[in-house]
Length: 58
Image (cartoon, rainbow, N blue to C red; front, side, top):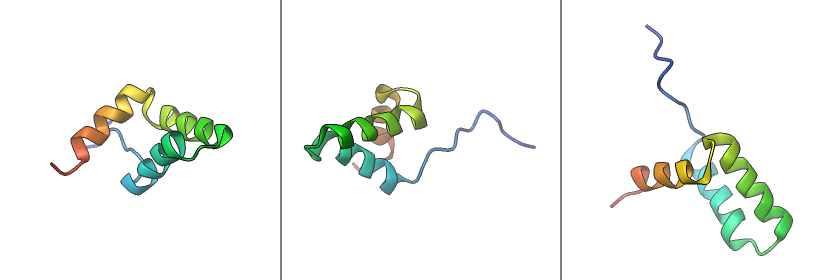
């Protein structure tokens, strides 16, 4: 049976790249693109942060 409640997120290295773009790139256009990609994938930056906190090794 198909579980429609299970959301598929992009691979972790891609998410980490978007976070790097947003935080460390130093280029406003790249920062905006990283933020936009995270919001498109998760719906909000808060959800992206929550996902990263859950998937990051302790």
